[in-house]
Length: 291
Image (cartoon, rainbow, N blue to C red; front, side, top):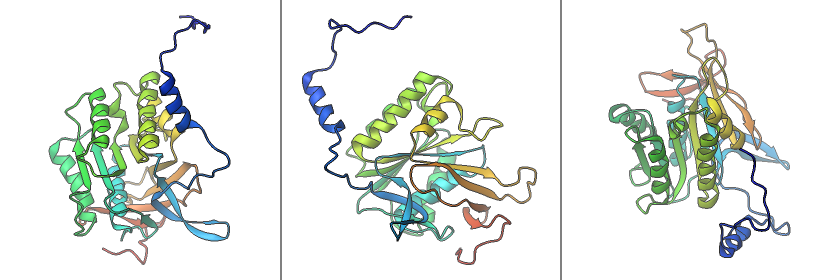
């Protein structure tokens, strides 16, 4: 279909009031430097202007992506990140830091699992908080029963709902279930643009989780590609030695980052404690890990 030529007679669908509102929101005054985005979760530190600062990988007003092959503990890592936001630190990952203001809340969405398995996933976050009462500020939802478009609508309404107190951080595990086909370019862009709108207008951080494409290190489809292009941070998980199933050492890297990237780190899973813990690339546990 040929592109319609824009003429003076082309109908304008938006009002002057709409344009004025968007103009005020979009215009950047170069004489007024904006404040730095508020950091929510950091991994490690960086040197900036001679000072050591937390290396924030998730800040308000931005999008991040966790991408990994199936069964790579990406949801478990998400639980650690959600818990560190509430606690401020993580016993198993000494470089993790959280920064939560009073009454800031987390929305945690699972699109794949039913009630039983999603309960275990969400309860892990509570357990990792070690007795800290997060019940009034942690809002877990399983959306397996909804259709793709309905999941987007529900998240949109939950974020804006009075039932959720001051949402600051939203996890969507996984974004692929917000579209019918991850290779649909238009729908994928629509969903990612909607997430970008949430982050900008509501000043929240949204972290989405997605599987890698089969046999690839890249997130699945146009959905994964679009999210990666727009994200502040991409956290990539992979088994360190795919041919050695006995080791079960996983590597976390940051292929893309708008800020200073963190150094690669490694973890194993402790089935007794139901959590991850940091090791080196040989599988040796760090001395300052506490269980």
